[in-house]
Length: 180
Image (cartoon, rainbow, N blue to C red; front, side):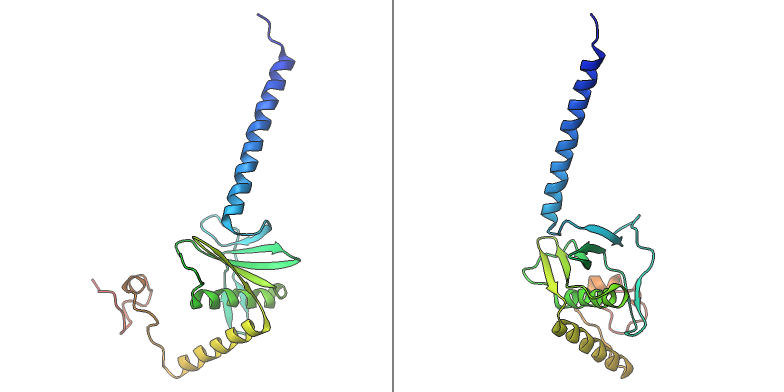
């Protein structure tokens, strides 16, 4: 029995093409299920081995943060915040403010984004970064600063689990978590 090397190479190339095609189809389906646009990831702070080394920082607003991703899309950078365990029909107000803060940081460091994306387990919300949204964020930041300076800070939730994982748990006089 003689082996035709050319036929064997052709068969291997065909099998490789089939595997590559299946992988491409799988990747495109996964991307479509993610709810995120096809875009180049230019920054990632999601998990170990991510590419982010520095936080975004605005001296002007006294704000610092790391969005989960920055995507290069629509001629600019789009911040993305991922909340993988959240399932809600509408985004939580605190998550909206967090994403708007990332939009402000992107504006300060790279130019104004048109929108940001908030990804929950079951949905992706596109939040337009309008003048009104920006003003809402700045007003909220100002109110927080006033309350902080007046000593009016208090626990903002009734979730013992959040208290248990808070770094101030042991010194907080409003903690809901039992101390050991």
